[in-house]
Image (cartoon, rainbow, N blue to C red):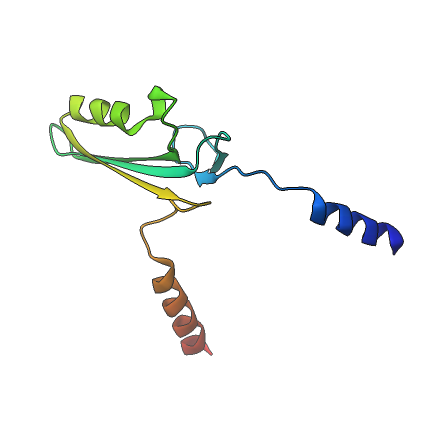
Length: 119
């Protein structure tokens, strides 16, 4: 019992890191989140829509690291435009803020309705 109390006390006083965690969507299988570098506090979601010669949509998610040009919105935008596409970059502040297209409030309404309807 004392050991658990000491562990909890130590856990409470050890500061948690100030890193931001973002969802990622890229070509690396089974990698769903990314801890951003210490100086990065924003996540991003980039959407590239191409209509010709073949219609497709590509979504890229990750940390909005302005010091890493490979994953910057400017570089991804240039790549999208080179394919003849239209790109949009959305940035947000906070852990997991670049999650999904469905608003959480919508899900919080629909799930209880579905649950009670099936009872």
